[in-house]
Length: 80
Image (cartoon, rainbow, N blue to C red; front, top):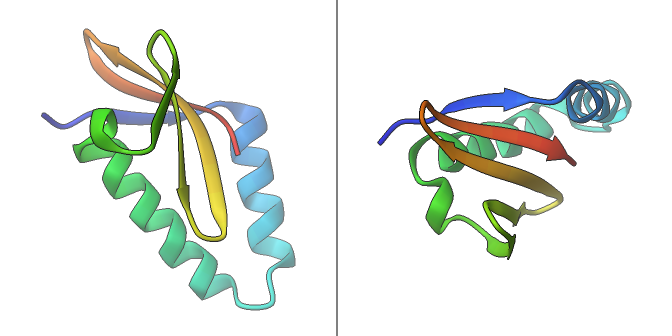
């Protein structure tokens, strides 16, 4: 099932700052695309469970903390 991925403003701000300061922004964007793919298509099997519907996952060099909602199917990225 496909999930809509929503980045909380603080997480999105961190992403934008990391991209702006990265030595290789294209490589970082590639990692972000991989994260988005997993969050969109298979979030329940991505990373490790923390509590309730919250999980953490890593795709080097980034990690995300996210919550999975089922109705509507949504993933909320809470922190980077």
